[in-house]
Length: 175
Image 1 (cartoon, rainbow, N blue to C red):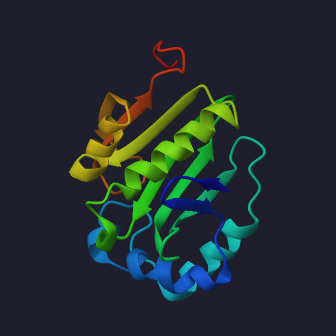
Image 2: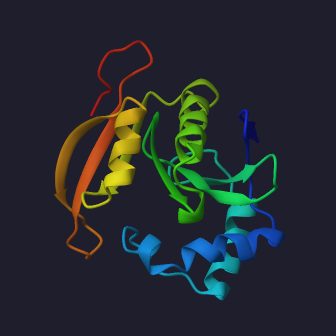
């Protein structure tokens, strides 16, 4: 669990399915995600899997829900996928009803900080659809640098942008 001034980033609970389904079932959200629109059943399965997932080594995935402390609402989610060695990929999905308040920036910044200081990752990357200007702006706000663009390997043939967070000492992250 990670806490910020306005958010609690925590593992999913069974009671979160409706809140996550509310944004994961939206076409305007899914258009930028390789997994597409989620059904309620798929949401339940993913939340159950995320709730017990281990984050011990390469291939493991950690997903934390961003709960607004003041209201208890789930605003979105931030995830890390452990790549080889000391590298991770960060991803995030937020409910559009919570845009414009800086919640996604706050949540992703907190998970980036934990990725470095709690888990010791040296390289942190994010991949985003080139058309997703909000996601690209978030990467830039958090100090990530665009290192490449290309077509996704997941069959969507989408222009994908890869961002890398500079190493904690300010030097470029290894690629």
